[in-house]
Length: 227
Image (cartoon, rainbow, N blue to C red):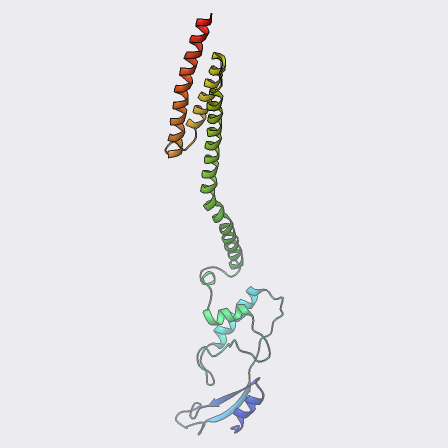
């Protein structure tokens, strides 16, 4: 029986659908039916609990797509299952499957191992998001540490130079000389021996060493003359 008001009925009742049984689709030779037949039908919905595991929903969507996704008298290939429903919301994982098909992991891995791989990938991505800023900041932190060490050596050198301006005895000058050699040894083990800052420090140390040596010779000479 052809329902003349099929279109109007489906507009008033969205859960119903209008179908057309094409002329001759049952039997081409006998032309059954003789004319297009307008029908109304009720679509079937598969309902699941909200707490159902997403992987089970994925398997259900996969099974329904394989079973009902083929062409038939009333539908073309891919018409069912559908992601539109006037009464119930469709699970996001089912929508993703219907639109994009099986995921990359599901294509090549067994279903039971996919959640574990996804969790592992999530952990790796999170670890990478944390590690990347740390590793990118590490060279800057290391450079700051070296520069800070170099600044401390400069402060010690300035202390020696300031002390040299006083009237010191030979023993005091010898003590300053020991301090200067310590500064030189510490600067030599820093991994900045190819930087301009390092060469500048070495030049200042050599200049201070030369000046200090002359003061020490002068102090010892004065001490000898006094004796």
